[in-house]
Image (cartoon, one colour):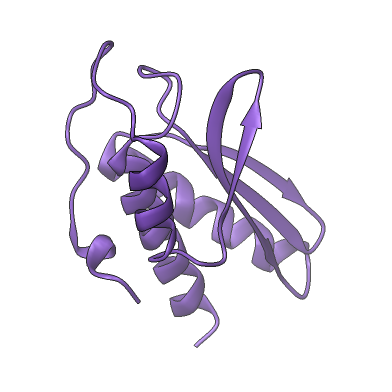
Amino acid sequence: MSELHQLKCEACHVGAPMLTDHEVIELSQNVPDWNVYNREGINQLERVYTFKNFKQAWAFTDKIAELAEAEFHHPAITLEWGKVTVCWWSHSVRGLHRNDFICAAKTDLVYQSLNA
């Protein structure tokens, strides 16, 4: 686990710098199960988590919603039977920011704690 999960998101405003391709590659090494997808010209960080049933997936979704509120950084979350897809990106910069990788690492930590 990287040290990213110990960091706190910083306020991100319109015009804040997006991560460079090099920074994305570097930070991606800390969250190896996440993938970067470009959707409509916007890079997004996404991971699919699997669960034994809907109830476990729902509980995870609730924990990620709590994390998002605590960090004041909000992902797209898709809840399905036995599966949750989490997608982080920074709306204000229309791409990836360090906050997205911090929250991805924290999301992994939540998943690990529920599956320990």
